Image (cartoon, rainbow, N blue to C red; front, side, top):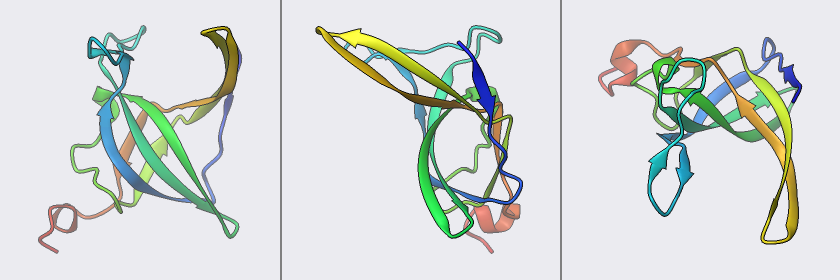
Length: 118
């Protein structure tokens, strides 16, 4: 399925919710794996503010692309953000939406401030 680049060059992006494992199956706790790199996947909530509007996105990132200092409120840079539409059927009901994926999310805050020492 096609994906589309998202330009964040004029946006300010903050962590809204910290990274958590992306699960394939909630009952078994199986963690999703990146098909290209083999890295476990994480999901992080990002607040994107641009042109007077703020939106919350749940973004999937390989574990290798996540800065260890990401906590709610951290100002971040997002590398390679893409959107993809999806559709599936679950229990006889069609569902659809847009998923978001990035290569990396890194803190833009100085290390001392990110550790609560600034």
